[in-house]
Image (spheres, rainbow, N blue to C red):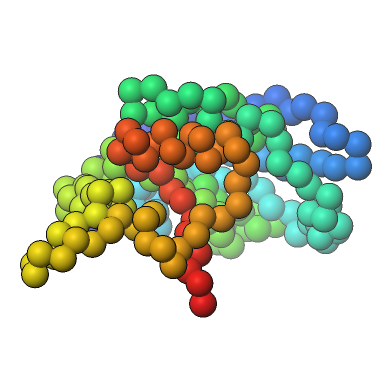
Length: 196
């Protein structure tokens, strides 16, 4: 099932400028990603961004990961017209919705690993089953935030109101922002943990 995505306008995606981390820590840093030069049937979008992954350079990565910390600007600063407002995250890229990102292992284009793909309802609309996905996402939105009345008349609570589930830890600003999202009935990914 192929999408009807057009070629993305950006042929190269550069990370936003980095900033200095606190002493003893490091921030994650994205590579530069390049768009494939011709349409490729191995990806349903036909397009993908790739960067080189050199195995020998990543042998000591575990030590680096132990001191990595979250960079600034990872929290939305506002919510306007149904959209989260976020500043660029230093050292990271802004992903193009609907286009996969892959690592080419040691320069071998036959050894590629897809590492991420961001989708929105708009990017999913490029696929033949885009309308079905939209309808199911709308139903999930309703179940998640509004609940449902079952056929026997029993009211089923919204997912976030189920008592045996609890939100994962987050800071005060994130909780405040999430409450605003719930009140405005907008979708947002939230991790919930059930009591086992």
